[in-house]
Amino acid sequence: MTLLLLFGAFVVILLGAELFTNAVEWFGHLLGLAEGAVGSVLAAVGTALPETMIPLVAIVFGAGSQSDAVGIGAILGAPFMLATLAMFVTGLAVVVRVRGGRGAAELAVNPLVLGHDVRVFGLTYGFAIVIAFLPADLAPPRWLAAIILIGAYGWYVRGHLQAEAGEPAADLAPLRLRSLDPGAGPGSGVPRLRIVVVQLVLALAAIVGGAVVFVGAVESLARSVGLDETLLSLVIAPIATELPEKLNSVIWIRRGKDTLALGNITGAMVFQAAIPTSIALLFASREWSIGSGSWVAFASAGVALASTALIFLPMIRTGRLAGRRLMLGGLLYLAQLGLVVASLSGVIGA
View 1 (spheres, helix red, strand yellow):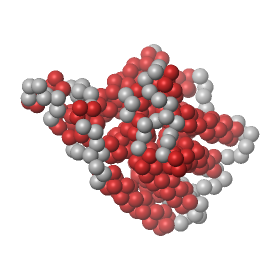
View 2 (tube, one colour; view 1 turned 90 degrees about the horizontal axis):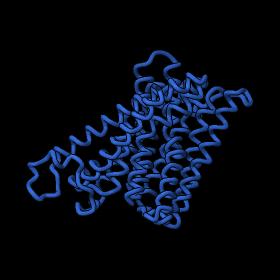
View 3 (cartoon, rainbow, N blue to C red; view 1 turned 180 degrees about the vertical axis):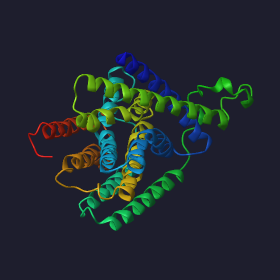
View 4 (cartoon, rainbow, N blue to C red; view 1 turned 45 degrees about the horizontal axis):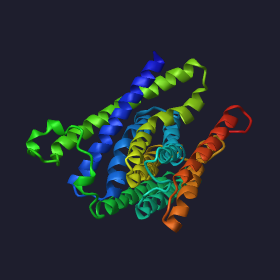
């Protein structure tokens, strides 16, 4: 039964991702937004919101330091998964595309858009981690840091929204729910905004609903085989909650929309580095601290920053990005997984 739920939830998420990528492209086109704004802001925030609710509920509405710790783990896990495993999955999609003869090994990305994303991510997330080295009882500097991070994200979004408009309608696939919009006029390939919004809402509902069922099934399966609860919360559950970004990016890679595919991930990384982190700094300031019991969890932030640098610094210098380079993220994911397992097994101290 659990395996059936897993498969059913995966299908629902996949269908939701297909509807979402199609609708968000049309939404950006109708609003005259640039490709970077569509991928790095609209798509990234839309698919990052479900997993952002986990730390928000745990920290703001939970009770006690245990709930705060769960929230901190979820906040640290999101950028880590995006910078490592999501990159690996996207790189794997590029390899499959090349072997199928449907595209080049080098990604057709806009290096300015992605370079801007990763610079903002490195600065904001690096700043947040530096704050974690302060003594745990110093709350005011953490509150100030949260305000700075929120302001930085607002500046980041503003820059993307002010960029030049994106691709023409001729380059977009027909809206999946176009048949429900007869008011657009016969022969018109451009849907009205209202039906695009309807498709967006339905797609997000499918993604969120499917993700909730998927996470529950993963947890049930893991516990049935006796998997450690801490390993589950640090490694397994974040994989499930980050699934929407991976599927959206894989769909865009398949269609040759490489900037949208990578921007969906890098934009989500910027969002996760600024907004959920600010929640922790404001409402769980004592827990946002690197100490003897938290260094393994915070080590994931260093891995995320290292993976981002290894993948994107060559692109910033040369303007070129090979799909295989994205797969470096998988190696760093395994390195952090080994660190977590060693800590849980007592080989190294937590």
